[in-house]
Length: 232
Image (cartoon, rainbow, N blue to C red; front, side, top):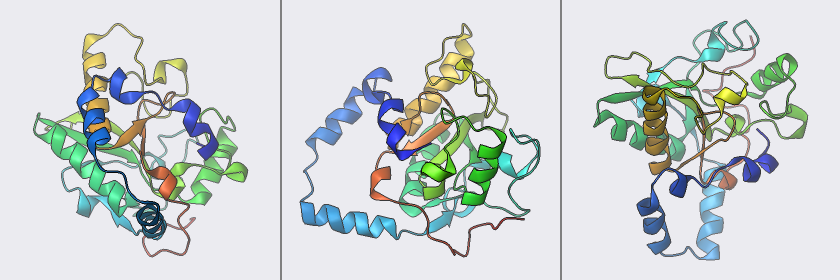
């Protein structure tokens, strides 16, 4: 997704999800000075990618783009690709995982950091800017290491029912569920509450896609980086 599209695709998540208390806590926190903010942004731009299997040991990982079960019909990531995020974003994800674990659920990761070559292949397969970021116009926040695609599983690792499968680019995949299955509605709401409480923004057209709320402080990952998979 393009950076310029974020403002129109993010819902007012705290009120919509019944998380007014989270908003109240944020409003009561002291504001950072300009100098502190600049230093924080500089630090985040250089923040390392970390392996979610190590940082978030409770999550399940199934990178869809390492399999043929994606919109291209073929694996995009090379063998051995790992799920990576910026350190502070991974910390947020761990908080969401811990929140769900206390309720008897687990997070499952479908995608995290996405190298530019992978974004190019997705655009070739589905050049629709509503769902896939055009690489020539900014690409995706996945390539910044600040976005993650997730679903919900039970404590045994079985995926729970959700509105659609991954990368189903239809109105049914919207963040706001319009179907009539109460189990699906409850599963989606539980996932959204955990992610929002941990500091993620929910995207309008893709229920599985979440972006760290401080994404503007980051930027594209500058290659080379030791953990980044290369094009096969």
